[in-house]
Image 1 (cartoon, rainbow, N blue to C red):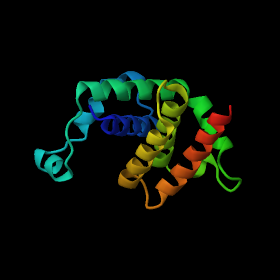
Image 2: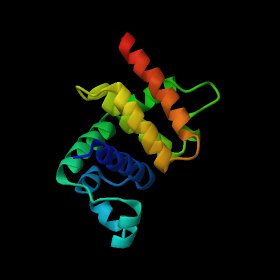
Image 3: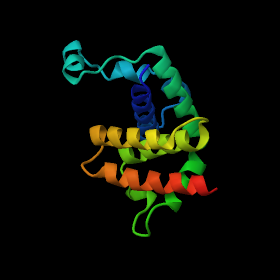
Image 4: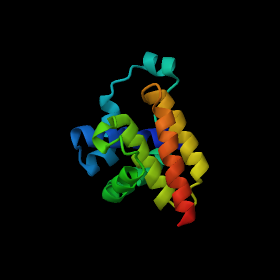
Length: 150
């Protein structure tokens, strides 16, 4: 099982949830994966492998937990934004990566904050805008440090 693939699934589901307000049941059924309509050729070119059941299970925990704790997570994000930023200003990809990463760091036992942050940075480099990884790193690092103090 690749936890990175599971984290990618989780962020994609949260992005979909935020954009389309898909139900939790639909997200956890992963039916949206089939709708992406990837041909075998494009899968091979992108080196993407369909997710295995364990990845969907791990992603499902992150998806359900993030949605359950969304108000707390969003408040945490807002409290760590500089005065010149607002939640509305964040693009949906960055927001989805932040939300899933914060859920994992704050609520999942045994989650290594450094690994979660590194994964979030790598995912944002692959899926986000050019410099979004710097922003994500800064916010998650601040939250991680604050969590250690608490």
